[in-house]
Image (tube, rainbow, N blue to C red; front, top):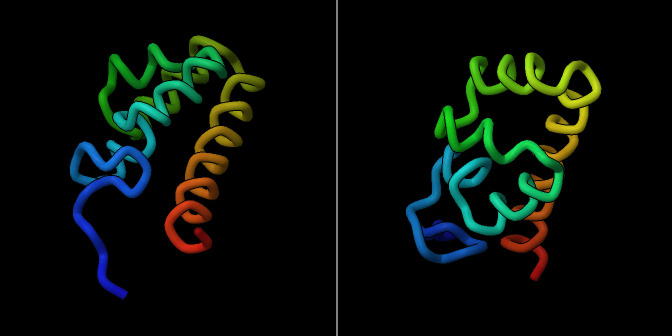
Length: 84
């Protein structure tokens, strides 16, 4: 299997962990819908600080929502790339 360096969903930027989970336009829309996009904009990448920011701002329920959102992003990305 040959891997392309561009994001498999938006095709605009080089794919990286930060892009997939925070920088991709599709991801930004999902995070915005969950009400947690501003944390990604501040930190710019997924990290412990990013999760702590989610926890500080939204509490434990927000952290669960964020974890579910990130899992959903990863699952959708993989479905898009490997099943379609």
